[in-house]
Amino acid sequence: MKTLTPQRLCDVWAFIYSLTTHTGILLLEYEAVSYVWGSEDNPVSLNCDGREMKMTQSLAGALRRFRQEGYARTLWVDSICINQADLLEKSAQVPMMSNIFRRASCVLIWLGEERQDSDDASKAFRCMTILNKNFSGREELHKYHNMTFKDKSRYLDQVEREFRLPSRDDVAALNNLFESPWFGRAWTFQEIQVARNSNFYLGLYRMEVEMLYHSRVTLDQLAASTQDFRFLVRRNPLALYSFVQHSVKDSITSDTRRTLRFLSTMSVRRGAGCKDPHDLIYSILNIVQDGPSIKINYAQPWPEMFAESTAQYINQSESLEILNQALPKTDLTTLPSWVPDWRLGPDHNLGGAMRLTNLTGRPYRCTASSNVDGRLSSSCRDLSLQGLLWDSILAVTESSPKASAFKWMQRQAFNLHGDQTLNSPEQEELPTPDSTSCFYEPTGQNFNNCCITLCLLDIDPTQGLGTATSHRWRSSSIERDTETTSYDEFKKLIGEASETNMSQRRIAFTQHGRFGVVPKAARVGDTIAILMGGDVPILLRPDPSDHKYEFVGECYMHGFMDGQALVEARRKAEPDYDHKDTSWLERLHEEPLPFPTVEITIK
Image 1 (cartoon, helix red, strand yellow):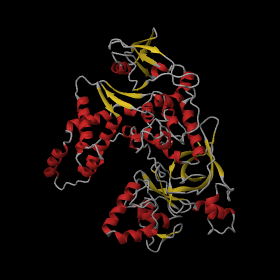
Image 2: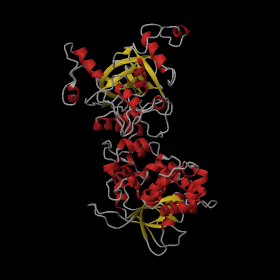
Image 3: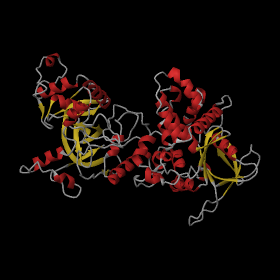
Image 4: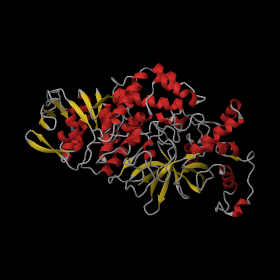
């Protein structure tokens, strides 16, 4: 704990105090500073209890801003209150940081100094004032959001006069504020989520968190209703997610841990700025409800910590959903293929990673109620899981399929045991089966419906993959939707949904005559595995040198997304099994598996 004494504003003096007693009782009221360390060049000296300490220019600016001339101010600042060079002390202190910021009377969020050559700070503040004053209640915002403009050039001036909207320059200045480095740092997210009270500071300007959040939401609503690019806020997911608690109705009194989940938070916050990769995970462990049970230890190499936390989360959550955050192996990472590299931001899609199991909508149940049993090797490199080495890719489209998907699928089905040079001129002359008389055996669909459902990933196109309300789209849905929608509208809907779903994906045909959708990085010879506890089949790349596999991505296998592969495995193990009885699929978590599995090691 440090106290700023009431000296001249150009000086920085501090005294150190204990925050609590040995029993955890709070000794004094204090405020906590949330800031970006910034460059370590040209450090500033701090006189602390008669000893000289060094701090960054960024922190020095914050302390000068927060100093009060008339009285002492007690602040908590991480770079001063924690010995950053002592890994043992750091490992012990970091778990306390959520409570430190939660107990602070106010969290002071420092965005930096005003630029001397710009008046962006005053423009941003003016923009927020206008938005909060003119759209202070939901009725005003709702009224404007539902307006439509047949001729914007005719009505926009009238609307601007009625609502006194901010100028283009003022909105741009507010946009720039949301691009502040503070929003992109790892630890600042925790600091605002747990704060009882908090304020933003930009130079001499002070802004309440609720004011800034309301301005952000209002601009989104204005942009949606007017289609005026002036109000379009740059999509900075880190900045938007910083206000996640303020989007909850009872955000002031709610417990952060009840609303934040580890995987959804990490998927948005991945790539956040930090000097040490450990902090990408450590910074949220104490504010999520289902984080992996790992001990904070800065002495442990961060790649091992990433692997340990991934394996721990798999077993705790009894799910393989975290694997969909892993990206195809590249030269940018030396991590095992199954471990998400949280250093890479959400925009990275190296090699065409495919995620079928979205974090909000999970419509598939490939292995029904079976349990996950993951084992991490002592080297923290290999993950062993129980499952089936179920099939392998025989052929795959060269790129994301569109109009040619139907023809390609027909050719594979007809030429299952023929020439596999799929794009040769000779094959163009091969006869193809009639689309209405040729059926896909696993689902009983004709080729028309099979192709449509495959490209839709069996998801209702009116909902979309991964939405909170997404649900499956059965064959009967085709007739249902064509009854309520014109043919042209229906065709457009299917086309748009298929194109979106197949982006960065390819259609595959397997050794056993099955069709599926696989990641763009898929190759002929890749293995399709059914891993116990998984929602979807997993594509693996075998390595004959050590009989291990590399993780490639999730895949969709048409007709096998609801436990059918397990029924098939039981029929092979028990020839007399009545395959019409599938009730046992819901008891797999409490009964022995009725078919053999193998241990699959992913490296």
